[in-house]
Image (cartoon, rainbow, N blue to C red; front, side, top):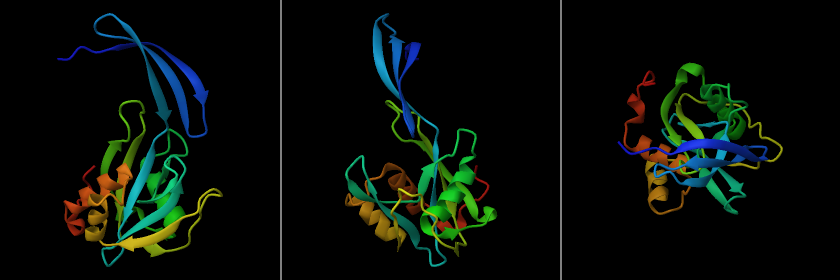
Length: 188
């Protein structure tokens, strides 16, 4: 078994709107001390919305961190650490795409940590089928275009570097490896 470092102190350096930034004091297995950056995140949820013709709805939006537009599955942060990710995914689906799905038509797909080296952000990703058209309910700072693609088109965009968002890559490749029509709703 690998020896573990031990956190001896965690100091809040900055409290932000989305994340909190900490400096951790770590005692290393060899007895030395090191300082690690740690970003705390309340968690998020995302959804792969599948239309009746099996095309997948994607959202295109500007992302400040990379100063570019991205093509992503709909996603968003939880309203609080206690909000179930299922509820977050259902909410974000309608807010961002203008489509909704009944609870029984939404099933768990996978979970992932976005950046394990310095952040605890965990995203639960769901599949949504039998979508009903409603209308978008975007936040004041959101400007989103919605487009639909086949899984083959999305896989090609992943493999050619046109899709760069990690949660979207994981979701697209997972769906590509399975038959979306036989996904087990009770997998979780």
